Length: 64
Length: 163
Image 1 (tube, each protein chain N blue to C red):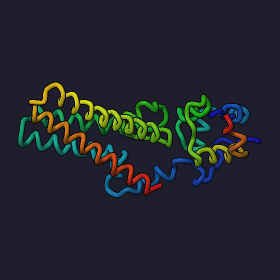
Image 2: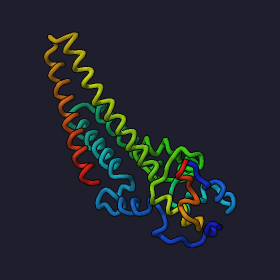
Image 3: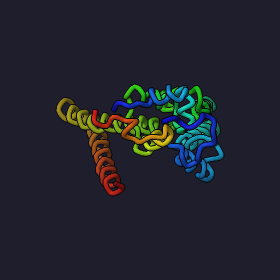
Image 4: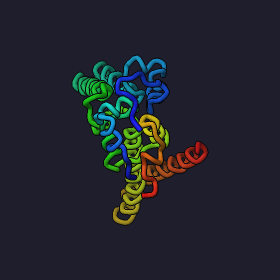
């Protein structure tokens, strides 16, 4: 599943580690999400969307 | 749209995985060891086995188990440290740090289950066809196949009821 996590993270000037700490996951998980190797749980998807101040649909491209 | 300021106080309930880690910490007794219940149980079992073997068998066997206990516990403690530890290390040490680690462990365990299930059945058929006179081996493999398939059935039943 494609996502805009990297783009949103860069906009906020955050490192993968900083974002990982903010949402309570490992840096490797953020990397896996950004590279499309891991599809998050609904809970994590919502946490990420809330953190970026947007919706899940804005962060993740579910159609693809 | 902008992310929350890094370092700003974040809502405790806003952290995925924090609930699970908190629940793990609350588990009485084993939590004092500061590792997952799985690692706590394995480390204690190895340590107890080490002491028992040292007393009732040979000191060397006891030492092997004690070293295994220390190794298991040390790996878990390092994995628990979090930052700077790889996902491979955490998964190998049975110390999942988040949902992806848990998913990796669950998928790996499921794959091992598949291999054991299919493997024991294939071995049983091969022994039955090639060396049917090996009765002990045949019964062993038949028993293993039955147990694995029984567990498969029970697991499916429990998981479907849990939803």
